[in-house]
Amino acid sequence: MTATPPPVPRRERAVRVVVPVLAVLGLVLLGTAAWFESRPTSYGWFAYAPLSGTTYVPDGTYAPGAAALLSGAGALLIGGAVGFVLGRRSRPAADER
Image 1 (cartoon, rainbow, N blue to C red):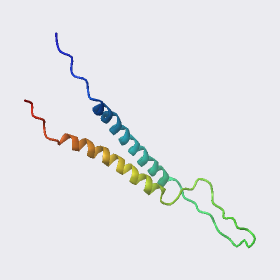
Image 2: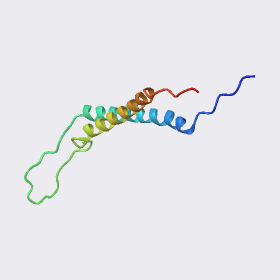
Image 3: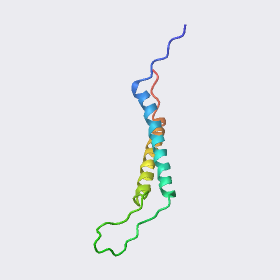
Image 4: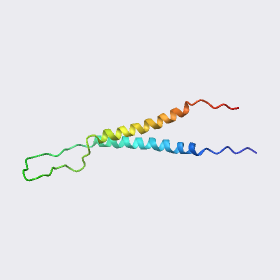
């Protein structure tokens, strides 16, 4: 009869779940940033209105730096996940005594 393999430590299981989730979240953020950049941008037009304290802002506009912020966050998440995976590969092998 063959021996059953030892159970995978809890930390290893967490790493196997968390790292892909972070990578997918990073891809979603990059995709959202690309979508923000592809949307047409229109800004309000300001005219003289001495009795009006309001400014017209059309619907569907986003902050000018929203796409840059999202793409930066997505790139950081993907870079962190890839760096973690590559860093775990290069650790020295344990002695098998």
